[in-house]
Image 1: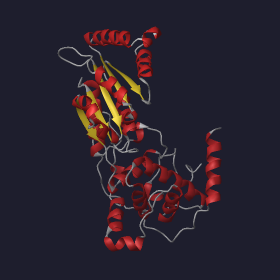
Image 2 (image 1 turned 45 degrees about the vertical axis):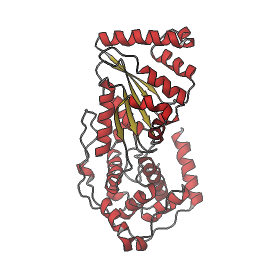
Image 3 (image 1 turned 60 degrees about the vertical axis):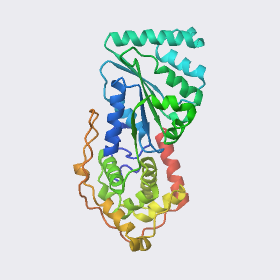
Image 4 (image 1 turned 135 degrees about the vertical axis):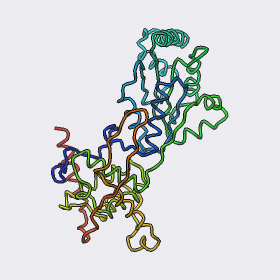
Length: 345
């Protein structure tokens, strides 16, 4: 319901992995290129790592949004399966007879035949496993053994493992040493810098039809970065709830105090006090980052192999106005409940 109030066509900070909203920083561009190369390059295992909420799943969706010629891609989004369930998944995705799921041997023999036939016909097959850090040792070993589906010259199945940074620690364990040796490509996402976080907010608002300068003050954006620690998903949570609160108290642009209130509600890190932060230059640096992006110069994501990085220009965001009224929590909860009922109609 706040869309019209802020001049938006749609909500810019929904948590769905919509590739339209993917901001291409240099690290995201490198990661997307790595995934795309892994899907089509017959390289064995490709590894994409990053803290929770940094956009790994969105990158996968962006890679899949670009058609890969003659490449069949299978996606496993919940890998907390037993060995039997994993082979049942392969049976279903490859269109094998249901009875084969009961025999690992039959599944592997049929998979080799299908993959070889696809390769001889000029096609290729890839398997993407998201949340791979949650896989059991037994299942990771099965994944390693799938890399044995190969000819004398190339892999028949490319595998992309997408997971949080704990996956890297697990691969260093002696039991998984052989799996680590099969990793041919590796990329890692990091939290956004202050400047990238500003670009993330500005670009999402632009795509949704709005103007960041009329929606968030410069101090608010600096506070969002402080409270989120640069994690894109956390930025979206803070921004969406801040827009609800700003709508509740009739505030445009949303100010720093609203961001602090929302962050306390979600138990995120509290922003530094402006006067205290100014002493060590931290707030000044964050404000500079929040004032360093021109949304008009941002380009939408490209799904080419080498997608362009986001140019970071200059954009003057409004300074903080007088201290806004504190958001009344019951009012905010009521609005959230109303929004939820409206969305379900």
